[in-house]
Image 1 (spheres, rainbow, N blue to C red):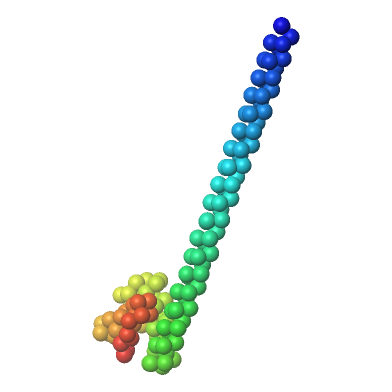
Image 2 (image 1 turned 90 degrees about the vertical axis):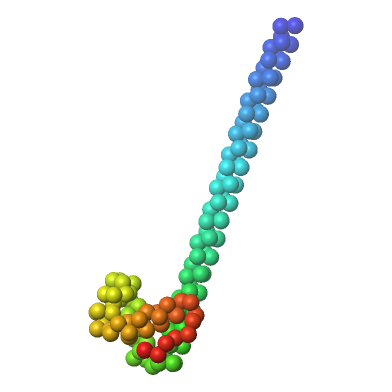
Length: 124
């Protein structure tokens, strides 16, 4: 009788250990799978962001080419310089740096905005 109780208690302890070990493995596997899925999602988002940036840059270049066809290479270079100046210092400083009149500055700012929103360019 005593021996059968010991066997039952031992079996229960061994069973509990096996179940807890399996539970730990299942929990760990799920956590690893979730982490892997999150990493894949993050990589996908990064890839999409990089693709979007590449497409935006390509569209910007195409719009600059269109601007050059309309107004010439010199005006393209002026717009590029203006755009870089705006990024670095702001519109007012870029206009002062290139000695633009207020009207010409306004025209260049409209054309700079037109690069991004696909609106019509204004003759500088």
